Structures are given as C-alpha cells and as structure tokens.
Image (tube, rainbow, N blue to C red; front, side, top):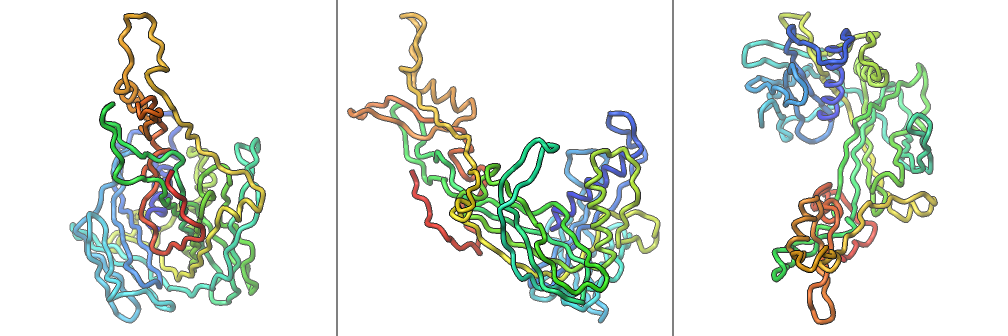
Length: 414
C-alpha cells in the first residue's frame, strides 16, 4: 500500500515541478523546497501499521531522503495514543498486540520531527466497509497500442453487497502465481573433466505483484443496490506466465471518506492526463496533513483510514484452456553445441574446446544447463539457455506463500 501511494506521489511531484517548463531539458531547481512526504495507512486488520516519512529530493533516480528520529503517534477521539517505533530509517511501526484500528473510531496522525517541527492530520473516521460477495473471472479482450492490437484474456470482476453506511470505495489487489522455467539448470560446468550436479534445481517458483493503478467508485446519492461486475484487472493470457500453472488474486475493498475519495480521484485524473506534463493542472492535490505552526507549508501524502474486506480466488491452467484462450510461450530455446560444430578455417587452427564454449556462452548471458554424452560416456555437447529460463529465482521466489493451496500437481523436474 505504501509503495503504491509513493509511486503516485512521485508522479505528482514531477508534474508540479515541470508543469511550467517548456524546454526539453532538466529544469534548474535553484528554488527547490524539501517537502515532507507521508505514507500512512490504517485499517481494522490485526497487524502492524507502517508510517513512512521522507523528503522530496532535487534530482531523479536517487534514493529519497528518509526522515529519522521523529515522534510518530496515532491518536483516537477517546484520548488513546499509540506511539510508533522506528524500525529502520524513516519507517515507523505500531505494535500489533497493543493497537488495532476499529470501525467507527476517529484517528489523527501526529508527527514531530527531530528538528521540532510538528505536523498533524485531520481527524479521520474509519467507515464500515461492505462485504465482497464474489470475485470471479470471465473471458474478455482489451485493445492496446492505440487500437492497433487486440489482446485475448480474462478479466477479474467483483460483486459486493449493498450498504447505506458508506458510498465511497477503493480496491487494491495482491496477485501471486506459480511458474516453472522451461530449461532448469541441472549441472555446474567447472571444466571438461569436472561437471557437478547443482545443489538445488530452481525450476518452480512464485511471483508476486501488488496493484499500482487507482481503482475507485462513488455510489450515487440514495443508491442502495450493490456493486456488480466491477472491473479489477485484465490479464492477457499470452503476454505473461501468470496463467500457465496456478494463479491467485486477493482483492481488498476499502471504505473511504468523501475527502479521501476526492484525493484519489484527483490523483487518478492527473495520472490519466499525464501524457503531457506541461499542461496546467486543473486542481492541486490537497493532503489531509499540515504543519501545525505553518499551515501554508505543502505536505505530500495522505493519512489513509479505511476498513478492509478481502476475498481471494484461485485460477488454474485448465480453467484457461476451457476458454480456448491463447497460451503464453517462453522465449527459451536451448543451444546445444560442441567443439565439432566449429569448423577450423585451416588445419593449423587452434581447436575449440568445451572450456572455450562455456566461457563464450556464459559471457553472452547464457547459463549452462547440462552436458550430453555419447554411448561411451564421452562428452560431446553442452546445453545452454538464457539465464532467466534456467533459474526461477531470477524472477520469483522458491518460498511458497503461507496462504497458498496447490490445486494442481507439482511438476516434476526434468
């Protein structure tokens, strides 16, 4: 959550910095002002909550300046205070055993920096959230590349119960999928006489992705019907390996105040219109956090207070094949080569060795997969493949998620 808000805030900051520039070069930031950036998200979940404090920086592609040594407190309307502990530079956490957000309570974030500057958020009520009825998928298509390409795939949809308590919603999702690299590395090449088995064949892993787009909705005044067929995510079946074995998505439905909904709505409009950052923006993004003694100081970020309802579904490869959708193909052709494949230009030329071949291909970004022997157990070929096709940890993790339930049999190593 914090990572996603930070992405949008970085984009917003660039817009603010560049919206008056007309020349295609990096602007001079002689009047640069270091602004406090606050990422804070409080829910009714039984877990630790993070507050991340940093400051804007006058250059791109460098790490943000983290704000350490601050006093960070979350207060409620009953006078209860929870002081967060700094766990690393600029990162402050609550104790999950001592503090948990509750629906119906109003919370205020208080920050006092090491220099003594005090900041405080507006009081934020945690509204109740409706329960998600179902998360499901349907066969669909999506147009891309300015209408020149049509992608086939599935669309994740959501239905939610009706409710009168709240009219503003936001959705985020966390997706995981199991994948298997086509050419797992089985051996280590030391030299022609020494080829050893790898300690672990890294063929099957899990990947993770957290949503970064802004998905919001405001119910019309007086509307009591539930939310139906809310689009959450489109997955082109032949553009990634998400749907090849088993896929899981957890959708979170969040309750928003009207002010927080307007904050995300403005962020969404700026993102959508971000094709031309030199256009004057129709409005400014207003934070709900301010400097107590200097209200005109601009603060980036928002203290988000939301109740959460979650629902998870699994999708397996057979579900996709039943929809007759195109399947993703790995670009993972194996290279099988030996000294005999190199024809020396003359009889006196130095012959190519297996060591030469291994050096050339690993230098080119390939990984050695396995040796091939003839009937007399004489080495005749080496097998190589792109590194990402041989080791699943390059793009994923060997650790199975704690929640994961295998609905398909694990694949055997080659």
